[in-house]
Image 1 (cartoon, helix red, strand yellow):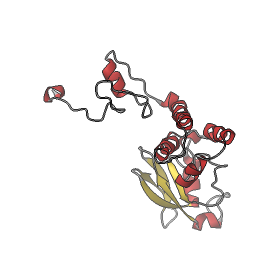
Image 2: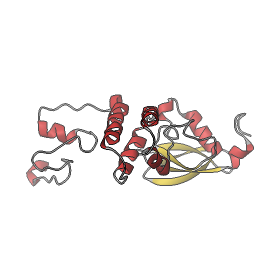
Image 3: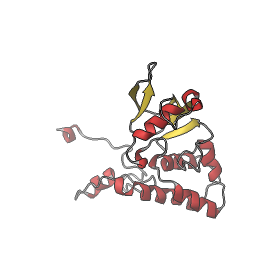
Amino acid sequence: MRQGSITDQDQHFTETWENIATRGNAIIRLDARGEERQEVISGRRSFMLTTEERIITETKVLDSKDDPFKNGDFRPVIVPDSVTIETNPNALSDEEIVQMFAIGDEAWSQVLTSLDSVATLRRMLDLAEDYEGLTMRRYRDMEHRLIEVRGSDRVQITTQDPDLRNFLSDKPRGSRQNPASGQDNPRRGMGGRSSDYR
């Protein structure tokens, strides 16, 4: 065994995860000789790795908020029983998210507070679009939690032009309105003149 915390089962159990982040995340793979090599996972796709490779990858992450297996960048598909919502509140499947939409108010508040992944909260908002029983209040709760979580990670852009400031803002859907077009997203339907690109 490579490390004291790695078991035989960890070496042989193959996990499946789905990348749902817009950015790429590196994982550690072990080749036939047991040597480590990096692989960048990018684009929305599923990938497999052993539990051992996941554990090794997680030990290399300096800050736990950057761990893609815990911050919601990777969604669990097939994982050991040890990976649960208790050990990783952001490790929610689409089915678990939909089930959460129907829980009581107190449980809803607790679960939402435990989530700190931008990717997970965005996925919740996407799934909420097709969920008929969701109240507007819960949808707003998710939007506000996304703003809280994203908070300090946002790059602040300052400009005197209000139209440009609105265009560059990265607020949840429905919170920005383009008065000229009546569209929710000012980026949609925006064209430009050739003189704009000189």
